[in-house]
Image (cartoon, rainbow, N blue to C red):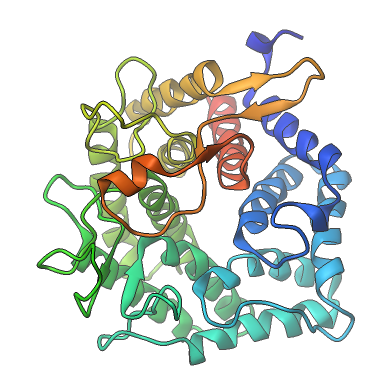
Length: 364
């Protein structure tokens, strides 16, 4: 089969298989850590397993969890940041499938972080203790889906309202007039990057990607009669309209600093392009936006395959131009951050997007 004949599912499996062959589950970088880098990639693999039923994918992410969580549900994780909660998305389906108590115990420890993490005066979670009074778009994805799913599984419906309030605060303080969202905001307005209003100075692609993905996902997670469902559909539509406005006409991709394409040192970044592709495709697949939007997702996905994906001589999947982990900063900070190939931020987002593209293509 030639590269041109590969389906989106083929690409998702190729990405997963490449990293599975390269790393033992617990050695995914950063090795031997409970970390959202692995969590994002393994959530993509979870989608592949759900779609295909191929047990090797389930066995791989289960082994990652089992090497870090002992029989009593003990494990080491950072207790001062929202990022530590994201891999909990692996614990809940493992508990549901196996009924092993250790997964429930471990999940409860992550849930209880929400009782101890520091908050802004309005009740917004600090992204990390080392970033006092700062809320980041990233954090909504890092903790939101887990909190809602945990609440639904273990009868804590109030967690839905907690997450919805986090989303409201993010939208209130980070939305730009062009419809995009700044990376975050600092309630104290004390950080060097803080604007007069407290928000970050730039629109960083991956943070906006997390937000676009998570708000799209929230809709189906809410009860059918929840008043926020319709509100979020409008939020998602307006955001995706804005995002598509800044889609590169030639490649279908998006820039590291999304709304500054004309700057000579800006570049087309892979992870945000994957996340935007996911959000558009998922929103079409779920009927939140009409099918005319599919062409934007299709153009973006084709752009990723043509411009950012390579298959090396050993047949291994390679996704290039992925920005490494990044804090909030000024324009120069974002465009000067190092990029890498097959960073889990990007590969995980690519796999997630690929499954949504596969679902959408099969519906056509």
